[in-house]
Image 1 (tube, rainbow over the protein chains, first blue to last red):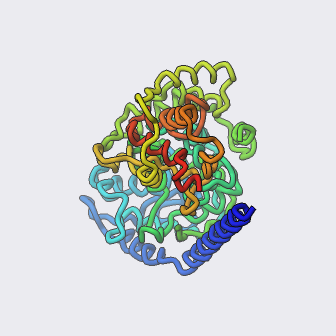
Image 2 (cartoon, rainbow over the protein chains, first blue to last red; image 1 turned 135 degrees about the horizontal axis):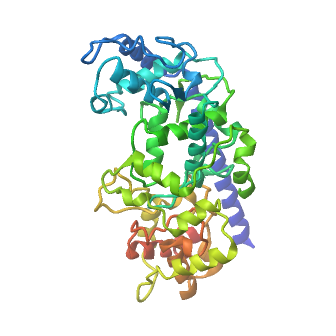
Image 3 (tube, chains in turn yellow, red; image 1 turned 180 degrees about the vertical axis):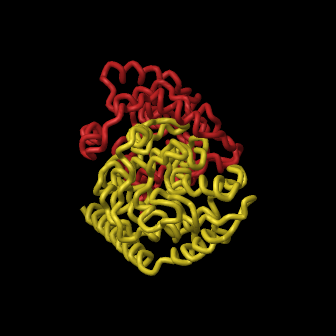
Length: 263
Length: 197
């Protein structure tokens, strides 16, 4: 009996500890949601947007992100979508890469050499993403869903989400498939549910506090596949764009409020 | 879970397009991925288990599951002698999430990523919840040869017991060595292990 009482006391203490830890994590999350360093990346991105570069010594100021050459306002909120000039669906980063190769005359190889940066040295793509995304703050997510290739892209994204592959047999749904689950202390959104996808997609790209890096959706897809133990997805490929497209379609209608902060 | 997955399309009211088959998805991935480090392209070729679980949204018909689980059971090589190693080493293996990614060095020791999904030792509060809690696992089940064999087999190849389990086949995939799996068996079953406090 004594042992039993002692055991219960221990279990209670354990539960209280777990609750404290959870409260601490919530406080920390709130803290990082306020006052994001993302603005620094937005400023750097603006400078890069206007900087002449590449063999054509051109800036990106005439880049057409879907609303006309050079129009930034609301452009990010309407991506991914189909672009006739490239005859494919593109997300922000894929479109930026397209403009680097067409307007600035840079090779794809050179322009993608370092798409994901480090804490010390952010990448050009990250800063540009911050700058462009910020011009859609307050606007509703409205990705392209009407064109046949847009429909195909969302369907491929949905199928990819459920496709099991790699050394550990994972699909996206292995972790993001059931409500109320965690990896370690990290809550896992079920991203095919609009109520879960909305707050997540509305705040990417984002400053990541745990690594002091600004991270993009292409990076997020890449790093999920790393942890799924597959080979590496190509930057801006139809596969990564399709997943981003599917997630954004699921979050459609949510007001964009990024670039935000992540754990 | 099953109902939710089946309803994805309907719930979202997204524009309809023919859903790509697993073979088509695999082809798209083979086109769009490249090998890096130890993560080779062969990893994208679905085996029978991955294919059936993708096609059936992780709910295979009972007879299919039974037949494939029996096949998977044949992949498990049980070592001679005791299956109980050292729970202290097991705890370190359970904590580590390293191994098998394109960023991990091929020869380096991998971990089991156990705490990512399971509660084990009560001292470790930072545990995931995708898998069931394994706290006091051996306390209620003992530590005899039969349960040792079950735990070893389950870690070696979880799909032999539950075809579409989300748990990786940690032995069959080459992530953990037989010796490492023995240490994990001890972590779960040894009466001295904190799991069984």
